[in-house]
Image 1 (tube, rainbow, N blue to C red):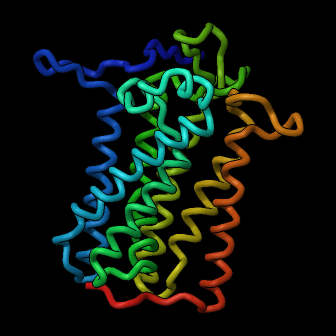
Image 2 (cartoon, rainbow, N blue to C red; image 1 turned 120 degrees about the horizontal axis):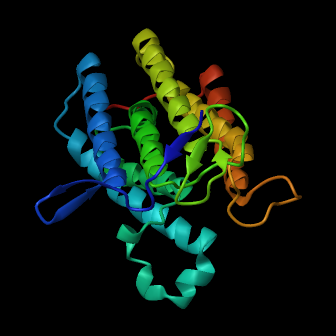
Length: 265
């Protein structure tokens, strides 16, 4: 038995008077709250000051949104946006690329650390890599409700029919991704509870290898955006490779004890 998904882009969850609350925005907001509470748990466990947590999340969020939009504009839909430059700022109409979001989020984190030198860059990167995975998973659930990033046709009994697209059972790839990210979140929390601050670079390595390795494999089940490279790899898959390599670089540095935490609060 296949599951029918009847929502389309900008699916509405409920109304607050004249304001329509979309599922995608609802999951984004829930993810940001989860990031805050996980960050709070990390800081309390390590007996560190929580006062700047909200500011850090704001830096990551704002620069992440900008980075995600710029990646969508210049990498995925440059022809459209060059023809309609007034649409570049219309983020409410959709179009956020997660790879650009990560790059922007890391830039926001670096700016925060520069303005708050009591937060070491390696320490902040490592522990942010623990806190954001639930957000990543919930964003993918939002994509599911919007019938976005759907998979290739399947005969498996858990196939989803996205009626906004067609009547063909397809792999719910974004659901696979969400489950993977939630699992990775539990792994990160397990590692944190076991090692705390004993292995600088561990959490960043697990984040990059686990998240982008999973994304690379699941892209084979997703309808590709644009032409395939070498008739096999999508442009989105290609973006995952530098992040996976980055993860292995951090893993190597961590195993060889080349990384350390500078002074933090």
